[in-house]
Length: 363
Image: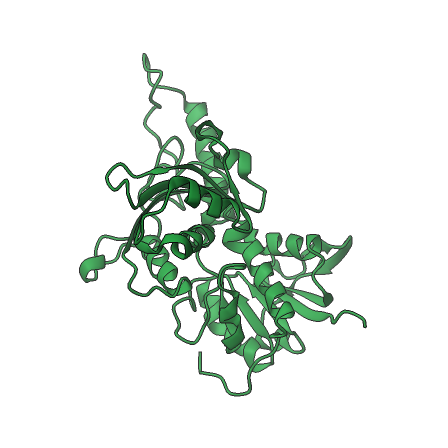
């Protein structure tokens, strides 16, 4: 019996993540009948290659989704807000990479291989979590299954590619600017006062760390947290179906091109040996665990690969019976965005859920 083929559209095809989605669809041989590339007016007419053939980018309008089965969307929250419901009305299932629908009660928030069962009750829109959340989920799921999660503390070190192509360009430009203008006289550790015109980052990203990603909250106990930090907190609770899990986060932007890193402290409900936890992580699909303390992973050497990499696994000296510290690294453009979106599409095909229910909520 021939394999069923699907009509697929990429919304935001001209962007950094959209291009990665296109590459993964080809690399993983997704069963495509027709492929549409959709973007804003300024990208219309550009061409991208798929399976060696050029495809022209079309304008993303409601009517562009006629006859489409699956939409992989990564064009910004306001675009998804406007167009995702229009695609669903026309019978397409939307896998949305923006933050707009992630906490909607009728929208499953899914990481491939972690909580695919949530797809069984989708209403037409499926959300892809934030990049820093996605890479953490297979690790926390395994720890919770083994010993129960009592509390989680996360500090993220997020590459500039998480801010898109413009952020990558700004890091490169500021680095070039600093080198051109030289170091302060008599100092080998400082650059001259910068006159660099920043457009993306609030502070210098070259040779610097910025503990500020997205806007700050001013609400109650969450006051002072950034939206990025709150995404990680609330999305983790939703994906793991642990709405009361105590979790806190600090998100930092670092001058790395691709790859997010996370320092994780996990307090468990039950005592478990370091050996048992390490073995459980080694048996987790799509996770690679270091063989020694010296074999730790960094974003530069793991970029452009698919797994989540875990190293520096050790007991927490402040809670040695039930606490652990870990270092988690992954390519944020893959599992944190494009790869996870395609994995969700693959799961929909496998579960025979590429269909929009007749009765669905108003998104």
